[in-house]
Length: 187
Image (cartoon, rainbow, N blue to C red; front, top):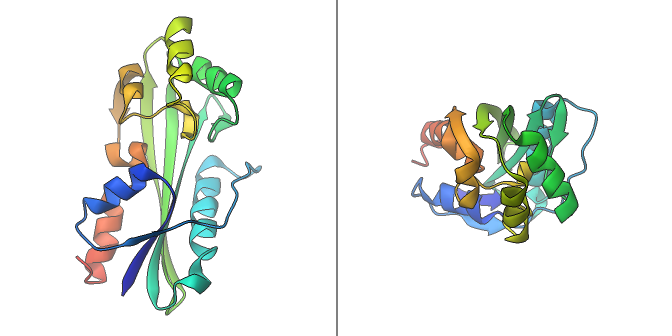
């Protein structure tokens, strides 16, 4: 079966490459809008909607959808819509431990069976100075990233501790995805 990654994220593409299976990237036709769902449920919902948005274009295939959201002190964070919002997010994350939820779904378009999983990771930030936050946001790296940071890039300097799967923080929980693909004999 062909495998499709319903994502435009270069990070997810890089992570999936580590599994050594051939896949194609397809842009999901779904726009994320934060809801009143729990953070974990919303990450799952977004992941499934990304996969389902392209299922008609990918018959007899496996589609991987994934999404990452952050929750800090009861506040849900997706991707910032502006530099101002990115600054506010980083100010809230500074000196705290937050929950990062990365969901992944694997949709079989031949059988319409779907596997779903949410990986929860605790990430602790050190105290950030206003200059660090301003400089980081000015670099452009904060945009398009849940919580306005990329742990695999310059944002790793903000992180004091990660409790859980690092790949999930980057954007794709590889352990569970590897298990699913092994069960399906793709690995």
